[in-house]
Image 1 (tube, rainbow, N blue to C red):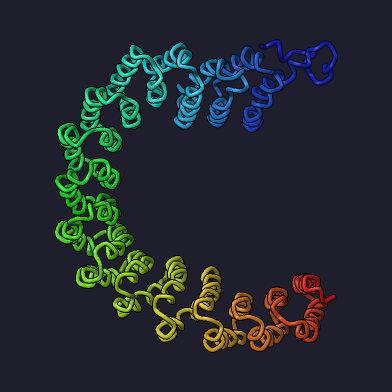
Image 2: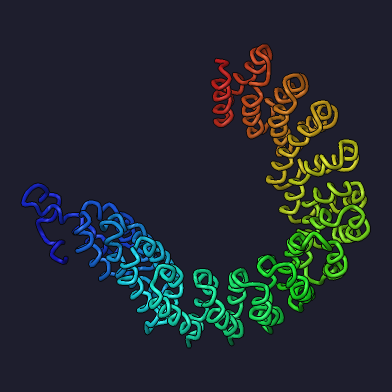
Length: 601
């Protein structure tokens, strides 16, 4: 291999003594020895091209051994190599030679950097599918065993991700060995290895025979769920979902539920958080009977947990929990066993908990129906609309459509308005921006009359906000409102107010008038644009500020196609020609562009 980089392998040798075939490898070696990481990275990314140039046999006999020997590089180079090798089967001669790719990937699966190991495992999993059952036992399974019994924890963690891909196609004798190796990793001395085993437990359980799940996986699950490290215990909760799907109700009750109950009350909040986070999946996996007997009491405890993170995670799951309950008796269960706890959370001390609840609580109205919503949920919505935290009010407003379907929005309007007004004037511009985005939705639900009376002035106030992003969003909002309420409404309500801004002393507000005209002209059509908007734009062509003048040119270009030919020729063309002679370079440029786009030359 080393000789490949010797003299006579350069481009000059091509077609000479036949050594030119070594050239790609020589270049690769030079690049991989280069001090510049970027060069090394680029050469790795070109590996498939080099392999093609070498052909399958030399790729196997020269390129792969070379790569295996040079695994001591920067992490990003190794990451690229691990990724490339996963797609290399065709370049080494197809599935019959897939095993040739195992040595470099085995080395990569033992390096210190986690992302490199993970990528190597991903590529190994990919290649395992290309092995024949015979090759799998001859080459892949020994690799898994070597990794599983390696001296360094890095190789043992990598092994955990490979058991499930080789188990289904192995012979019975080999299956027993694979299970044995997995068992020993589950009780490894190093927490990182136990964590890796716990994270793959559910995946491994899915490929095992049912008897083995009961006799081997469940005891492993029980041990991992009571591990001294909470980072291992919380991963066992995740595995519980997969294991529960495989067992009968009877086995679940006897083998899994004691451990799950224990996890829901674990002394570490991180484990309880994981139970809350995975609640919907657990609920589906264990079925309705166990949900009613075990999970709902556990859920009640999670909703009043002493840690805010756990309460927030549980609050997020309220709607899904209720939706997944059996239709028969659902309402009674929610009213008696869930709602009292939700009421407590509405006034929780932590804003994240209240915010999490506000993002889902509106969805309960469709499940509980009109009467229950008015009697029990409405007071909660109203309380949340008055919450001091903007996030809570915003989450309620953004989900109004659920309530509108069930009871109509009028019931909320008295409390809704003060909340909207406060959010619209919130000191944080992102909050103001979010409420603008909901305005068209609110407008559609509240109706034109109510909107004009209560919210129109807000929409106009946003047009002169000191933050550009707000002014821009407010402009787009106007267009959506015109699409909802029609051109007559625009002509009477919006256009006159926008045009007044053309005389504002602040040039930024005068520019906003132009931005509004740009979007409104499309929604309002030719007549309103020509009669009401065009005269204002033309008048602004004489503005003292160059920024306003060049925006006049841009506006005329935008509204030009909407105007009739007479207006274009008689009114727009002279103004653009005048702007085309402006002393300001930008004004001149945009005016000339408008002239050519509108074909007025």
